Image 1 (cartoon, rainbow, N blue to C red):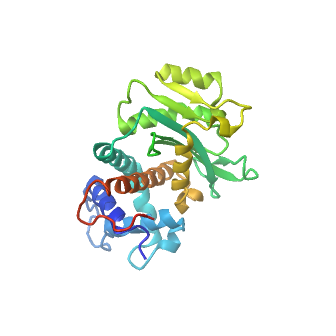
Image 2 (cartoon, rainbow, N blue to C red):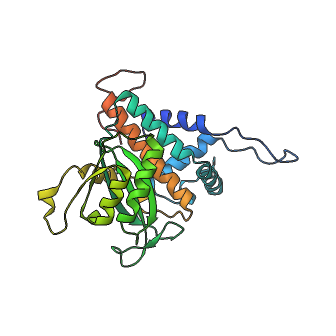
Image 3 (cartoon, helix red, strand yellow):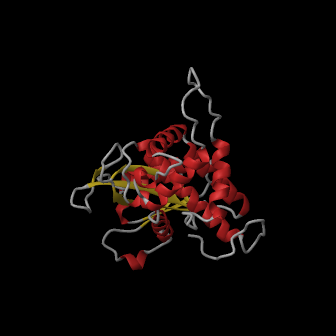
Length: 280
């Protein structure tokens, strides 16, 4: 049973492979074992992302866990996932259109039992190691910019880095941008930061019941739920921050591609388009 349907996996791999640099065999004698194909390693990486299992569990006779670990580290250093996500956003914007006038930003805390560079003491899990990801989405919930930090970091200081990451992924933003935030960002420092960036903000006030001031930020909560569907993000065992960001942006790419296919299916027809309304 494939971890992703072919309508998601094939276009994802085609663009991923186009970003990979050409491999140069540097062995002086050329007598080592043949190099495992990138496609095989990629399928194992997707399995690790979806199921959240360790590399030892997703390894097979075709690809060992050490090969997966080395290749993921190499791909993370090259920034392949960030480039892939930027291309997915360009495709979505060209076919459907990104609504960048309304942005929503929020953080989400998940488990990081092995600690690492991007982990910290979780205030919601008895001080155990945890990971926080701050995500900015457009008006329909497409993830744009992502920042990883320790679970003990507050959401407010991560707002500006998240918006800067958004600019890096999508390019220049419109002149008028409204940022929707929850009550955790309710401070003069946040309002000053938004004003310096030239943005307006709709921030929930502290002490006011949430249903009364729900606003438009619910889309980022839904995006966090989509990303938490990947086991590697719910319980991240990676220690290097580069590898953590690799999996975060890879999952955001899959979410973007899934939304692109869902919204494009009623409008367009192409070879190999999905025959089911639900893409898992």
